[in-house]
Length: 312
Image (cartoon, rainbow, N blue to C red; front, top):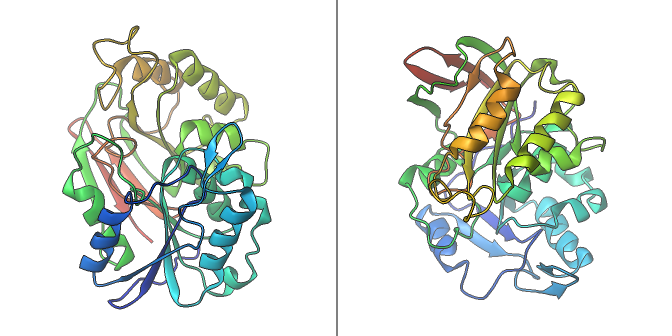
C-alpha cells in the first residue's frame, strides 16, 4: 500500500467540495487552522458553487470533478482536504483521471460521504486519511484530538489509540489492512469498482448517523451476504449518532454510541470468530480521531482495553 509523502511547513493544502454545497464563511475556521499549522490553504475555484438537482450540491458534477481533478494534478498541492460530506462524491469518482496522482500521490482527508474516495483509492493501493472534514458539524463541541491526529498523520507523527473495553467486544489480536468508513457508503459501493475487495486480509471500520435501525440491519445483512463480515480479520465500530427518529429514540438520540444500533450490529458480529471492538471514537461526533485507511494495523482487544497500532 502506497503511503503519500508527509507534509512540511510551507506546503499547500487544497480544500475542495465534492459533495454538498458550502456557504460563505463556513471554511473560515479551517483556513485559520491550516495557517496555524504553517501550511498554505488553497480553495478550489468552485468551492462555493451551488447546483440544485433535488439536492444542493457544491456545483454541477462537472464543476466538482474539475476542482477535485485540479487538486489531484497540481504538484504544488500536497494534500486534499474535503470541505464536507453529504452526498455527491460517487457521482464524480469515475470521471477522475489518476495518471498524475499515480506519480505523485497525496493525502485525501475527510469522512462520511468521503468514504467513496477512501474505498476507491484504498482499492487502488493508496492510503487515505479518514478524519474531520474542513467544515465542522453544527452545534458540536470538538475534542482537540480530532484535529491533532489529522495534523499528526499529515506530518508523519506516530498515532496509536487505546480505549476502554465494551461488553460487546470480542477479545483477540489480529493484523490487517484498515478499510471501510461510513456504513451506508460502504454498503452503497458494493458491486462497483470502488467496493471493498479481498476482505480476507482486512480490518473493517464502520460508523454512521441519521439511519433507521432497520436500515442498519439491512446494510449489515448485505455485508454478510457479500461475504465481507465472515472473511475480515477484525471489526471496529465507531460512532453511531442520531439514529432512527428522535421520537422513537428519545433517550439515546444524541448519544455518541447509540445502544440500539450496537444491539443490531452485535447480532451480526457475536458469532464471528474474530476480534471486534465497539465504542471507537471516530465518526459523526466532535470526538473523531484520524485513521490511516489502507494502512496495516494491529488490533489488540483484551478484557480491559482496545489498542489500535498503525504498523505501516
